[in-house]
Image (cartoon, rainbow, N blue to C red; front, side):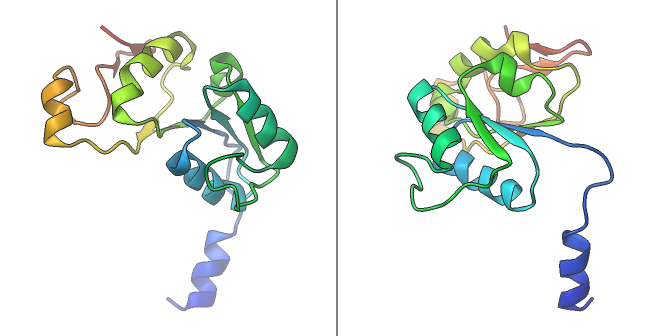
Length: 153
């Protein structure tokens, strides 16, 4: 396939409305949000600090991480799980694994039923030995979709 055909196909709009929620406003979450934002895909970054969320919304830049990268207008930030997750088509989990369990416990009641979660966490053997409750997939802390939402033991 020629490069022009690949470019044309990758810039076509999606066949349905889609919105992402990115869990984590660190470097990796911002990088993934930036890629989606360049395609004008609406998304909300769910972070921990209200002042950082306000800075992103006002200046379209993170004040600390990747601060030289302008974020697309389709990217918003919040500290509210309800706001970030309420109508997400997909959720990207970009929270460092050592903070994942607490983060997921806090947001579990707000995760829409049957919404796919794409995890980007890296897990080493050392971390696995200390987080023995990770799922067999080795990516997320104990959680599973059991037909009616996200459950954490």
